[in-house]
Image (tube, rainbow, N blue to C red):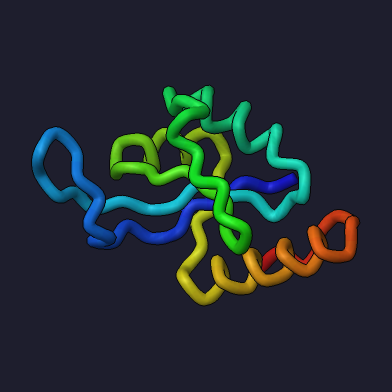
Length: 102
């Protein structure tokens, strides 16, 4: 399984009363337990996980994004992220594992 981060953007993420840029921490794997373990290593709580059908992820601020990259998360652009999520969704529907990372 590989863990990815997309680019920081203004998604309306609010932290301590102010809007900050954020990104998504996500995986191409069907089993997301390794994603949870990875997120824990950068100080994320499982309660912060966003279990969307299409794109299950954690939202990260710039500091946590840098920590994720330093631990081996792969940086991708939005087009690559969309492709990974699409392939993952198809793999989940097929009951298998995804392949075809960027």
